Image 1 (cartoon, rainbow, N blue to C red):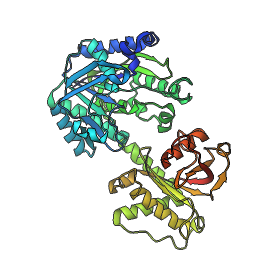
Image 2 (tube, rainbow, N blue to C red):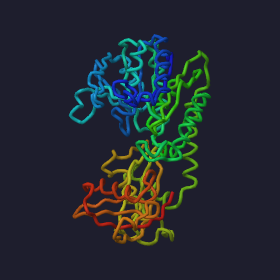
Image 3 (cartoon, rainbow, N blue to C red):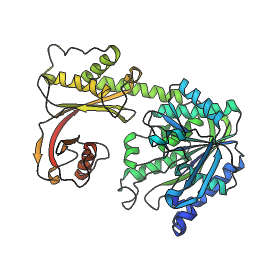
Image 4 (cartoon, rainbow, N blue to C red):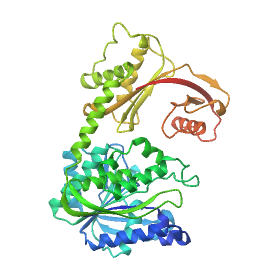
Length: 465
């Protein structure tokens, strides 16, 4: 059974050996972590499940550390001697993995065999920082389950939390689930990222929703607000809330502060033995309704892109262009087709100059390529088709510019060229606020080293949804 749920931040400077004198600037958080540790230890858990944003995070899967003994230290922060060793609960892991895969939620188990792929089989600071306070509070060397959330749908993350509960109940284990994560990283200009007004808004909403037990409102926080806030803990929270699904709890916020431009929230969820209505079916219904509404209002160009990819994935055939061609597609133009799934990019392919007889053919081929040939992603599967969001950008001819001052990331896309290398970035993208950011990202995509002299071109787009 789930005996307690917890929310904890993970800045390494919370560790006295690292923070030292700066620890006085986060006294509220230190006090909150000590209170949280006391609540957890009081419940005498038999397993601690920690969800971290700083482990092995994949686009399409949740990952769980799979070594029999889980180890970690704070060597990256100059404190190798602050180390941790806990047994892994392999039986819990195996049963949870089976349940997840039965619900089509992929789980990647990470062991030392994956070292050669650059994956980390050890506990990261998203786990070791909260664990430090739990150990100080008297938690013994109980088994852990070290989970890294994936960039999968919120519905699947919530469902994964429900499966954690099912596994705990089936094994009869007193289980604590801890969501590790900082809130907004954009509370101040002097923080790790530049200030954004949505940063304080996000933190205030999350704090209030947890205090008031407003789980559904928490799950409905818009993706744009989360993106602007620059948070790292929201997906951990979603899994935690899933583990509480159908069961009532008493929430308590122990502390909140953001002295360094990052929000630190410490909170506990104490199950009180009551039952509530499951929210999972509501989440799924809301998602289906959003898809239906999006289909009803999509533009003709986007509808054509969607139908082109769906026909190709489902039957391998290319749809013939509409006859007669609609006026809006009866001319030659360059175009990009972008696919998103659950707010995350799922594919994007386009042309900078028209290479086909008309825009209908340009969109059809780029839609198929975005779904099947974008090297950054695996090909779109048939079962994913209903969840995809499409946009089509129709480009004006590129024009050379002499300096970055002639760019505007909201109005113009950019092309950077250096020898045979080139990179493209579309305009008006979330998180791209300045022309310099736009150029830097395009250079990175092209594999051009920072500081290299490049040729610049700009273009305008008409974006269709």
